[in-house]
Image (cartoon, rainbow, N blue to C red; front, side, top):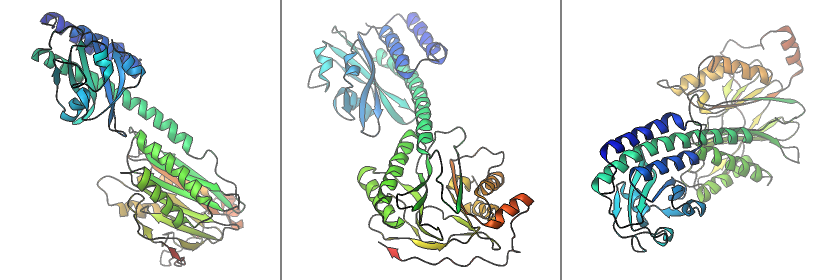
Length: 435
């Protein structure tokens, strides 16, 4: 009753399995789904078949591919989870059979206007997560059976696996392209300063929300920013781009760093709900003798001064962006001596599995030298990354306040002068805080 003979079903399933693994390896997601749905309709003697994929940002099922009801895709039909036939399948994570297709059972009018009489749908699952819905329909009144349900669930497993693989590949490629486009292509030129930066994505993982930025305003004020949006996904990379753009825009208001962070935090609370990010940002006016530094949940930069041991900046660390609420933030004013190097970084540089982060922070501190920014980056990457593929994204931004003696040190190939470790850098001055 609607099912192919068992021998034909098994042969078709085997064909479907081979199709998802090899034959369509080069097809994009849409072409892959179109061919899979054609096979699904053949297996179940159905007139229509469709895949709706879950859009997590809107919590809607969006028509992505269809056979027999292509207008559902062309019109980009979207069904809220929990609403209608497909929405109830996603919400219940279980199969549903319909013996009547009309406005009381289906929210998408295309389906009953098409003349579909009976339907069967199952969830597409990736582990414990619903990623979409697969449904089929018939134009005659032959009800789908329990055996049809079992068979469609087997097919759905294949479709979900192939779909998730293609989506992850596409998201990874898109996120990498987005992330590369958002990192500054060229660091600014400022008399008396030199800069270097490095970005290394995590090995074998979707890129995330780590970024660095360096820019000057029309007034000549220099801004240095480093941040990390929680997560490793295309969404994290997109939000990272929004935060970077927002921070640049608020910097144009000629307000101190902590007020810029406060405004960015407000934007996250209103428009990027359930997002958290850490940021460290600094502003400097020519001739760049002091740095106004504000931090939102981010590890403080390392500062290396000639003839002193490198140390982490003494600065008040405010709450993460997205969790700040009305809590006050402040900026700290830090003097920059000639020859000083300042290192901004993300936690992927210092965190290691099964190791206290303090060990990584100390490893970084001792790797920072008061010398040219290129040499600082080289030394840090050699000491903290070496030949090890990082488990998390690494962003690194270094500023060096040039010193006439540096050129002589570079030519001589000697290391900058260091103390025996008993002296400590002078504590930086604390700036006036703001709310």
